[in-house]
Every structure is written in structure tokens, then in C-alpha cells.
Length: 194
Image (cartoon, rainbow, N blue to C red; front, side):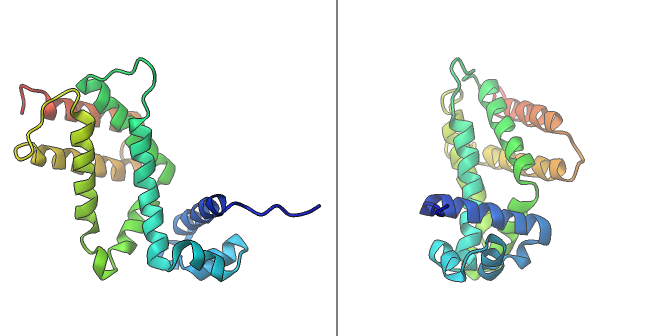
């Protein structure tokens, strides 16, 4: 029976899944293009063609998680509640489903990327990315000023990030994390509180 070659996109996704498995099982320090090639049963040049180097691989892993989270939040279901509480709940559900799906892999990948000089400020850039995303997400429900509400959006990002760590560590349950973040967002962004 002839072997069917994978498309480049399918191969890339397969390699990213295997890379996440390596990080999950052995830690980010063990993730190299060579270990990825060996685990995937492909030649090292294939991993280089997809990612360029270890830094490129780590970057694509982390960006993939953020992109999927944003896509999950933006996916509207018919009849979705677009009130502040509805949007906050949608964000919280997607955020913590992403946390459960990825566990500590995301944090390990970001920590590994921060060891590269050009990514030392990565955590700040991730925060800025999510603050801009939150501003856009909540715009239909609440008017946010660029200057005054940035600190509030940063606090929401920080709370979601810490709740995700607590969820990964087993300190809180997923439903508790969702309810807590939803309530926090509503309290912080309600017109009477800003």
C-alpha cells in the first residue's frame, strides 16, 4: 500500500502537537529540533524547514495557543449573550478550557522563550496583546477610555493568568475559575465601577 505524504500544514500541526508532548513530559529544556525529529520519526531537515530553529519552534507553539484562544472567544454561537456579563463569561470559559487543554505547557514555552534576549519582554508583550484584545472584545458592552482603563484591563489579564496557574496546580476548579473571572470582569468594567 503506497504511503500518503502529509500536507505541509498537517505536518506542521503534527510536529507542534509532538513538541507540546515533549514539553509536557520532559520539560521545555528538552525540546530541540533534533528531539522533535526523533520523536516524530522524521529527518532533522524537516523540522528545520518548518521552524528554522528552536526559538522559532517555541514561538510557533506559544502563538498557536494564543491564536486558538482568541479564535475560541470570538466564535459566536447563534443567540450569544453580548452583554458585559455574557462576554466576560465567554472569555472565562475559553480561557480556562485553553488552560485545561494545554496545562503548564504554555508557561513552560513562554519561560523558555524569555531566555532569548529578543524575547526578554515577552510577558509584557503578551499582556499588551491581551489588553488590546479585551478592549476590542468588551467594546460592544462598555465604553473604555484608552488611558484610564488600561490598568483595569491589565488587572483582568493578571487575574486570568493567576487563576489559570491555580487551575493547573489544582488549587481551584474550572467552574470556580470561570465564575470568579466572570464576576471580577463585571465588577471592574461595569459603568458604575469605572
